[in-house]
Length: 40
Image 1 (cartoon, rainbow, N blue to C red):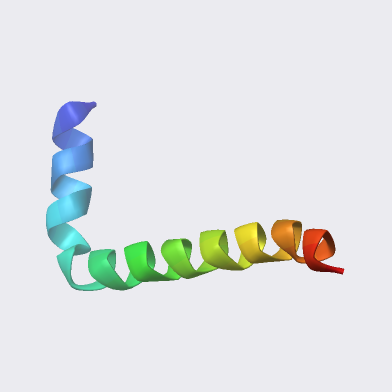
Image 2 (image 1 turned 120 degrees about the vertical axis):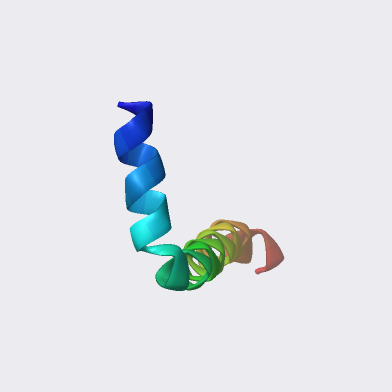
């Protein structure tokens, strides 16, 4: 199983940073949306 993860990570190395950036942006939007009602 670890070998499969390693091979997949090597194959998708180019998009791995973009995926991480996208996931971070989604988390920031979620946290922002949850805190937004506290400011009204």
